[in-house]
Length: 73
Image 1 (cartoon, rainbow, N blue to C red):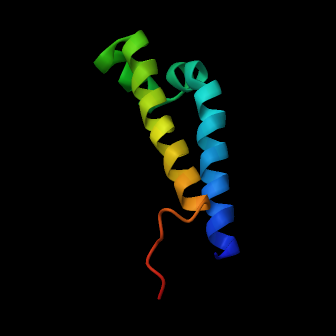
Image 2: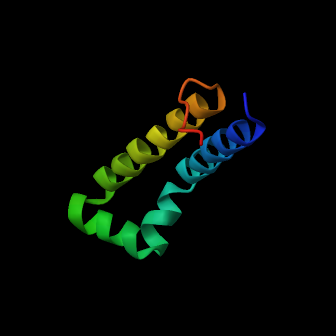
């Protein structure tokens, strides 16, 4: 299994996990977060971000464990 694939998967999962902890800050201090809050409401915006970052965590773990295999040239 390529080391760069393990690194990219781990980095993606860790960044998304960090973002889950900072969800409130993201909603309050970024334009996209404020847009989500206006569009879905504060509580639902948090859920949308949890869903997106949760998908990123799952993708990162699957990439790091070689379940998802990117195209190699």
